[in-house]
Every structure is written in structure tokens, then in C-alpha cells.
Length: 126
Image (cartoon, rainbow, N blue to C red; front, side):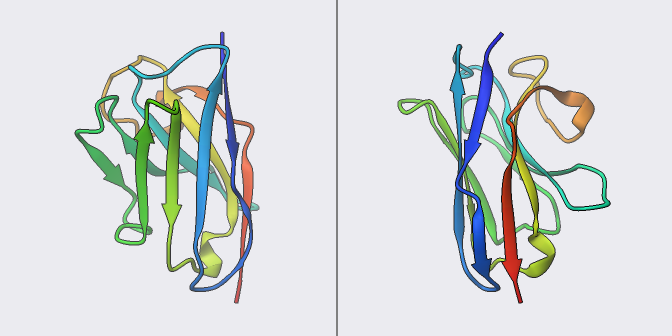
């Protein structure tokens, strides 16, 4: 069926940056809407960002707009989430995601997701 492997998390001070990567294995997702979600302790998983298969459109959660950027490099079969000006409230496990219906747009809810990465921990210290 194929899996998503996300990486790049870590511990960073407030104001710092991290870049998350998502690389599929077992199949390609070049024609899929891709995105990122996150889940903080004791909270529900929430939408972060999404990008169309052609990179023509992106959408971001209001809480991270202007600080995070989603991009995809199909030559490298990788989706990225560049996170700048990180805040302690960004601390969460971040999950790469692919839409359950392929190129359908947008992908804003967990119910839209057909494939998940295993998650990568991002911790922002104050």
C-alpha cells in the first residue's frame, strides 16, 4: 500500500528553525495532495499545512501562517515543512499525510487523510 516516512524533528529554542521531510516508500505520491498535521500532548490532531500535487496551491493553519512553508520536490519524491520563528506552543508530534482521494483539494481534516507518516517529535523550549 505504501508508507510515508517523516523526519527532521528535534529540540530547538524558541525563535529557531527546523525543516521536516516526508519521503514515501513502497509507492509514489506525486499525484496526491500532501500535507502536515500535528498533535500536542492531550490535544487532538490538527491541520498544519497542505499542498496540491502540482504545487499550484497551498493552505496553512492560521496559527502558523507566515512562519511555516510547505513545499514538494517530486524529483526527490519529498515533501518539506520549513518551520521558522518556532514557539513553545508549536511543540507536538508532526505527521506527514497524503489525501485519501489522491489529488482532491483541500486536505484540512484527519478524515481527509488516507496515508500517515509515523510522526516526528518537535520540541520548542522557551
